[in-house]
Amino acid sequence: MTKASTKTAGVKTKTVPYDVAEQLRTPEEMAAYLDTWLVEAPDDISGIARALGDIARAKGMSQVARDAGLSRESLYKALSENGNPSFATVLKVARALGVRLHAEAA
Image 1 (cartoon, rainbow, N blue to C red):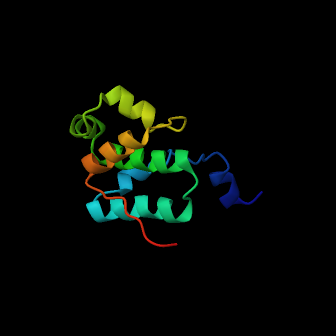
Image 2: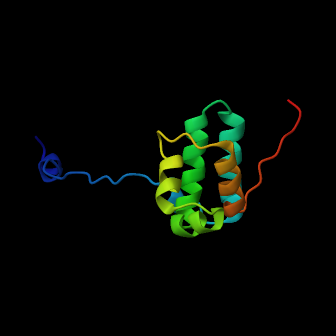
């Protein structure tokens, strides 16, 4: 073993979980993030719900819940990995987030 390798042998790398919500700072970034999910994975219902949840956490879950007329707990549940929000909930959350869903010809 070389002298340099003995110094780094005991060093451990510290990792922290990545949270995309910390990167979503502007309305444009939030809209682009959701649009990417809608375009790239349109059949991934849970992924799209999680994307809405990421944006809601970036904006503040309590405020989004109030603006959507939902309880904070029900919003967390609906937008969780195992959540299955109704279309009405998705529309309420999108409106509260200040994003619009749109359609175009395929």
